[in-house]
Length: 283
Image (cartoon, one colour):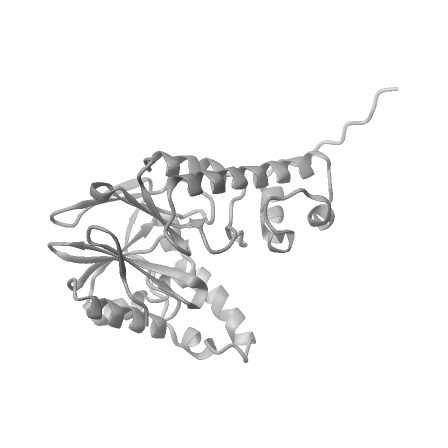
């Protein structure tokens, strides 16, 4: 159980201990839009109970900020509770949801000691059925929200939700507050800083930004994290330009984040760069 805390007019955020993941509810005269649905069907039933306890209306729309299980595995539970409601996501995220979900289920099948193993394996993976490529406005009745794909970063299907009437941006895992940004097997470390520039362009000095994990932040926090993401991209390019082998990069690189979390970042960055050309000295 977690309380939904109002961070702006009819925008409530609940922070769940498992993965420290955020679920956001946006109210309107037509009901609630829920952004991200938690990490299993069982976990999502708890979210639904918390929403009913909030008493702000029935859920009419769901949005997934990207394809990862901790943001999508509750989709089926929301459909079961509220009927055939629309689930929105970027087209790349919708296409990747099942594959990404089955990949994580494979990890849980091999880990018999994880307390969440059974609920993960029992979860039906349901991808979004309403997709877009660049940006779309959703008419919620007495307010409009914007879904924007700023580019590749944490995944190739990240979106942010802008709620212009209250100057709130829901950033998904493009922004993290309670831990460093997560670079996984499907990240794009060289693109991520440029995508963050688009996110910053959607904010003002007074904006509230809700990250995928952790407490809400302001624009200054997002700027600092964008700069660190830029330093990370520069570090990868520097390693590649010096022809540092991939298996040595983590030992010699100068990174803004803990090196033990960056194996996928460096590998994915190397894969994005063209093969280096060795230049022999002229004699």
